[in-house]
Length: 268
Ligand SMILES: NC(=O)c1ccc[n+]([C@@H]2O[C@H](COP(=O)([O-])OP(=O)(O)OC[C@H]3O[C@@H](n4cnc5c(N)ncnc54)[C@H](OP(=O)(O)O)[C@@H]3O)[C@@H](O)[C@H]2O)c1
Image 1 (cartoon, rainbow, N blue to C red):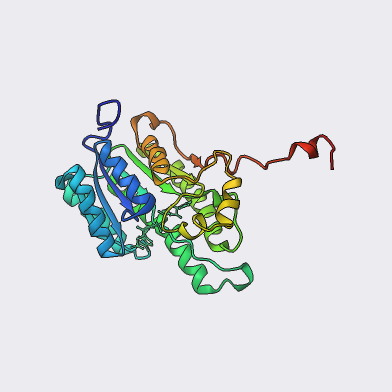
Image 2: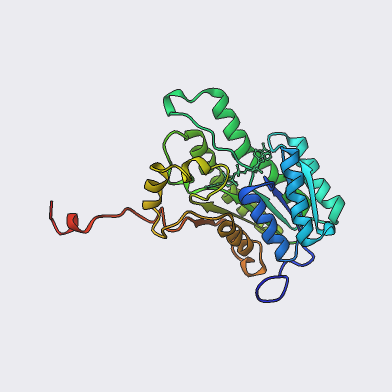
């Protein structure tokens, strides 16, 4: 139940890729809190099963399902979407969240890294969004892809990730135009730095973590729940006329650059 005492997503069915931990798990939990039935998918069986069990303990076994999924494989994605429809009878919401960010300095970036990061983050999102849209045809649908501030505010040593996330925005906007007449909205959420397994090393680093934090005006790293809240809005009835939008959730990090007052005053 939500704080307002009703379940805005009651009767809706959602799939969340990469739902076994971090941001994806928080999204699954939030959609369940809002009343949806949810299928989560990821590659690692044990983490996935344990996440599904934790969700089922809170929200009930009938509303939670899990299935091993590799978004690099078309058949795996189609089976995942099919399983949601088979298990819950329909599909209303798809969250393309699965991602990976391994990188290297630009001059050392090899073909294997480039291909894998694009395959998971960009092509994986494409497969998820297209397969889900096909299953949604005939009734209103909601697709949300998890992009990143890296789509427009790149960081060093992860060029393939920056490129993939920029591509995700183009993909999202393209799908949004074409699916609007089908009553399917397509949007993206762009997290700044959120404390998850993906970012643990940086967040906890005594020097780099602190330095990074100095560039976040809100004064803290994001939580997976911050991102889940943005997704909850975009899949809600309140967002019925919002499509093709990249909703940045970053504590203000990418608004602008901090210009010290003394340089404005002309002081050295
Ligand atoms: N954390 C941040 O600061 C941040 C910032 C901006 C954007 N994002 C984006 O947010 C999303 C979630 O990130 P996170 O921080 O929660 O990362 P995470 O903790 O590493 O979780 C990633 C999830 O994706 C799954 N996954 C990875 N490769 C997959 C594949 N080929 N097929 C299916 N599932 C796969 C993982 O499970 P398995 O490994 O078991 O498959 C896991 O469930 C990603 O798209 C990421 O790029 C994160």
